[in-house]
Length: 410
Picture (cartoon, rainbow, N blue to C red):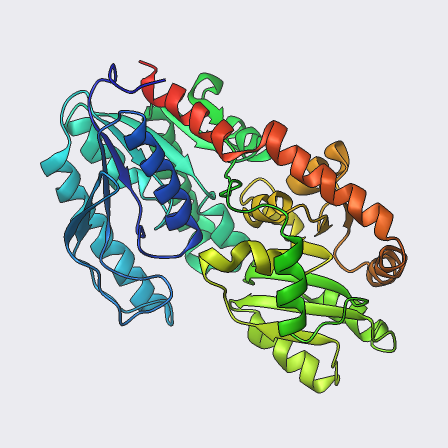
C-alpha cells in the first residue's frame, strides 16, 4: 500500500527521535522509516536533546533513512528538577510552534505525540492555522497522569483548565490514536467523538526480537545465572507509575530459595529504591544490570524465565506499558502486578501468555513464583502463546498497516 495518493507530507512532532534510544524515539523511528519505504514524504520535528544524556546535543538538521529531521533549539535543564523540566517543555512548545508554522502546508498531516505533555494544544493550533490535518498519537493522558502521580499543578482548578485545553485539542483533531482499549474508553468519556478515536497499540521490532535460546544461555552465564535458576526479570525504566513493594516483599519471602532470582535491567526513578531496600534486607537474590543496547535486546529479554510488568491501578487507561511487546516477541510469559481488569492483565488472560497479581498481594505473588519455578512446561506454553499473540494481533507489521490506512484516509 503506497503513500503516493496522500494529500501532502507527514510531519511528526515529538521531543526525542533518532539517534536517541528512548522508547518513544525508537517507536517513532521504526514507523517513520517504514512510511518512507511505503512512499510517504516524512519529516520529524524534535529537540536536539538526548533523553538519557543531558550533555549530548544532536545536529540541527539531517536526513536519516529518507526521513528529514529538524531539531529545534530548546533549553536543556534536564529532568532533575521541576522548574528546569517546565522550562524545557515551554521552550520546546514555542520552538515547535514556529517550526510547524514554517514547514506545514495545506494538505499536510501533522502527527503530534505526547512528549512533552499537552503538545497537542500549541501544535494543533499551528497546524490548523496552516490548514493541515492533525492526528494526535497519545502515549499517555495528561493532566490525569500527573494528578495520579502527585503533581500539584495537575490537580484542582489548574488541572481542570489543562484538561479542558487538552480535550478541546483532541476534539478539533481529525483522529486521536489511543494505544489501548481502556485509553480509548477514557477519551470517549471525555466526550471525544468515537469517530475521532482509533486504537493502534505500540509495538516492538518483532523481526529482530525473536526467541533466542543461544543468546539466552550465553548471556545468562555471563551474568552469573545457572541453568537451573528461575529468573524473574524487569527490563526498562522503573518509574513512579510502577509498584515495586510487592516484588520486594516476595523477594524477601523467597530469599531462602536461592534458585529463584530477581533481575533488574535498566534504570529509572525507583531503581535506587530497589537497590536501597535490597541492601537493607540483605536480598542477595536481586541482581542489577544497566540498560542494554538495542542490538543486544533479544538476548537480554531472553534471560528471564518470566518478566514482570507493573502499573498502579489508578493509571489504567492513562498509560499502557509498551515493554509488553518486546517481552512477548521473544516468547516470554508476563506477570502483571496491577489491576486484574487492566489492559495487560486482560490481554494476558485472553491470549494465555501470563497471569496477574494485585498490588500488595505478597503471599499470592510468592506462591505463584514458587509454582511457576517448578513448572517449566507451563512457562513454555505461556511463552509460545506470547509470541503467537504478537504474530496474530500485535506485530509491528499490523501497526504499520493501521498507520498507513490512517494517514491515507481523507
